Length: 205
Image (cartoon, rainbow, N blue to C red):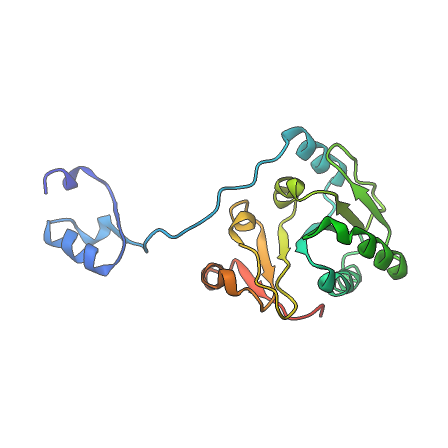
């Protein structure tokens, strides 16, 4: 009891613990009711110099990230970007594929779409007229999760997908979009959605 009086505020993991503290003489104004700690994810590392180059070359250009895109999701992601650039013509889409072997399919689809694209590697400058940047490795996610305020966590849009964990994006402050097929990570997405940090989408529109 004496030790607890030394603290300006005490955080509990629920009402029952708060009631117990109150019985020890702690005033309600010094008790903060929270929830139990849950699993999270450590932020992905990144090369600070490469991030600085990206940030400088973007120079305020709006950007969103599509991470872990599967071949079955390429059309929907690019259609979403075509819709979005009607309202923000300088918007840049960065694509990180789930399987790098799908890069040929992605490039072929981009050529048909008419979108201006480039293959990006750490240290590269993003040209101002680039509409889509293809990150060559998932190791580069740490850079783009920091640069993009909005991330679509793919591998979640088509039936049979299981989703990817959202906390690597949320831990770096990126808002999260996700498809309906996230069974492997449903509690995590539900937590973020309840907090207003994530929203589910079902198609390009």
